[in-house]
Amino acid sequence: MKKMFKGKSILITGGTGFLGRALTKEILKYKPHSIRIFSRDEVKHHKIQEMFKDYTDKSGEPIIRNFIGDVRDYSRVLRATKGVDIVIHAAALKRIDMIEYNVEEAIQTNINGSLNVIKACLENNVEKAIFISTDKACCPVNSYGACKFVSERIFTESNYSKGKARTVFSCVRYGNVLESTGSVIPFFMEKIRNKETIPLTDERMTRFIITSKRAVNLIFQAIAYGVGGEVFVPRLPAIKITDLIEVLKEKFNSESKIKKVGIRPGEKIHELMVNKSEVSRTYSFDNVYVITSSIEEYQQKISPAIYAKKGRKINESLMQEYKSDTSILDKLELRKIIDSLNL
Image (cartoon, rainbow, N blue to C red; front, side, top):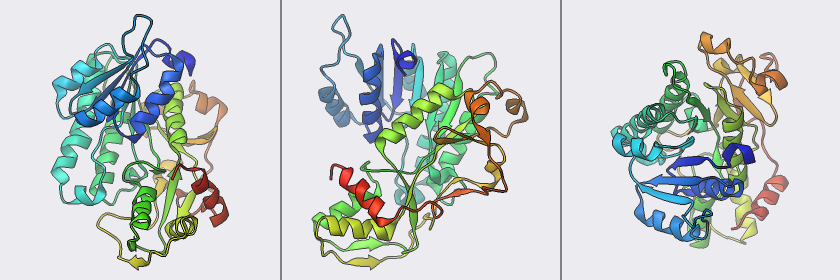
């Protein structure tokens, strides 16, 4: 990791969010030249500035550079990527319920914004670009997932339409980041603290969970091992939402009632991380699955990749898909995870 980031300039779009802050903290350990935080929220930029104000280079210049801007604005993205070595594209509209009724806005940010990032990376000869996707992009049933699915394809396909440009484009795909803004645990915690009724969409519902540290490490793996066109998927535990509510109520001795509200627009009962059509081109390597591109030209170029040399191709007779109802944590294991969090 030290070689990967030392002396490099890194741009994180959507960098003032929960994941951006976690990435920044970790990357700073490896002595980068600079970390450019790109976001349209000037209040969060100020908080980032205060959080990392003590990090400077040998000449006293701040390592953290704040870029106010929107990924919809190509000229601003182009300027932000100038002189950058690595781009981590995390900027997105993410609220599923809001996006279902504001689809055009999601397209502008999540798809057109991704196109702007790709064009700017190619124009400025960026070394590597990583797209942050979601399990909802796998067989999508909502507008958010559909936008992320299209953006995954844009990133992976760009490896083969880039001409002589050196940029390597890869993706990561994962589930709910514990403690992140808008995720299920902070949502339930707010209800419990305020002694409000806890809404339950469906008692069968399961979800993948990932810690912020694991999410950051997955991104680092994609940067280190990607040769272009991959989707890196972590092997993760999953939870039953009913178990999570029970464990949180027990932990805080809550008497909040549970009310079944039904599945909301765009929700699934179970999430997918690798679907049936992807299994045949997926490798198991270290603690991740690596889904390779379906483009034939790419399949001929992956042999030097470490995941192809040291990993193994998935046996389709043993694994048909990777779904959140097949790796459920029991309540004891879930309780240990909850106890380890700063709640």
